[in-house]
Length: 171
Image (cartoon, rainbow, N blue to C red; front, side):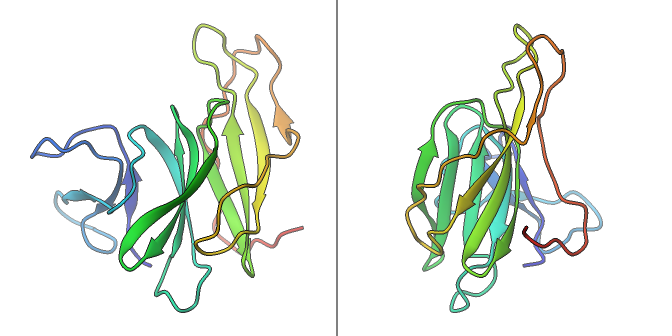
């Protein structure tokens, strides 16, 4: 939709906690831009997001997946201007990063998880989650076996994940 978004645990000048926020209007190129939370998203510790356009009757991106490092992954759909939760089936496993691709009404997500922190580094995983529930459908998919896995004590983390710009096709 041509809009820049960010995740943050910071507060706005008025004291409101940021979650998933729009940065300015469109793609800001100059000056300091205001960040405003998008309506309906409640992830207080959001780490990364993935937007998808699944319903042609809704203008622009209409599905949002949010990784919150304390509560897991939540799917939202844009219904009459507000983001409405479609479920949070992944409540644990220390999820951190998310990206994905869409094909028809199906969303294939790639998510990093099990990053256990400085007291027990390592064990990070990259998993695939296929959500076929479509726009405003209940999010009930299950993660795959790890695609990438770091062993215990490897002192490495998998935090974020992203596709390089270009054409990506599901396999």
